[in-house]
Length: 333
Image (cartoon, rainbow, N blue to C red; front, side, top):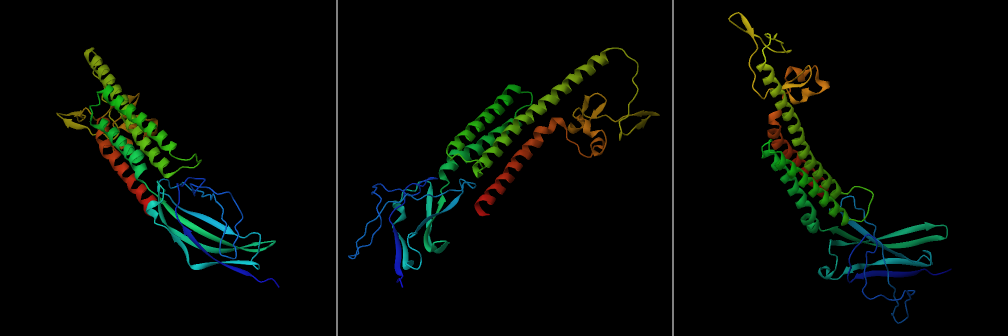
């Protein structure tokens, strides 16, 4: 009967080098790989290990990783060699001298597993290096510039709608800036096929900036049409014509004055005929979809000239809510 050899194992970690998606550990001085052999006088020979740590970057740059280092005697089954952890099995040197750069060392864990194969059972010893990424670099290089660019795009809501060059140039500049920031952000990442947390943030910021530019394009389009319609009305009034018949809109009220029915006057911002045969009392009623329903009755009423006023409230509120959900979701959930 073969006597089982029991090996009590402990690990001392002197340092860890820079962590990247492939080679986790780094040794400045490399040794030729040799078989590990324990001598009778307690001497030993050792070998260099390049251990891989596969990083899942879905939460980048708020990601945390547990990188395993496994070792076992696959040449000798459990009934011949048995590994056991000592009481003080894992010790580390002072982590402040470690060159981790983007990562912070959280701690070490050790486990023991048994691998069942056709040739026998083997004991696998595993050490987990728990790491968390430092966000300082990415906050300065990506997050703060993206937030400031989005806030800058809102300045156009306070610029006069007739200042076409100013608002257009501001919108295009912020869109191009966001494009540059998104390109730089992707260069700091390994090429992965899935969306990371930083990709999501940059994409939403780009959508907000682009939406601010489209808001002015929409406003300018409808206000320009309105001015054109007013010019046509003035020309029509200057020509002699028969007294026009009064066309009563659905939901309008006739006011009797001296036995003559009059329609109440409306302010200039109320609306205009933006499509032939359709009342444009509100911005959305310029489309074919709203021939009937609450839009025509005036229950939902958005004046074209006040789109900038609505945007001053909607855009900051929506962006603040997104940031609240984003940071709570990735940092605490």
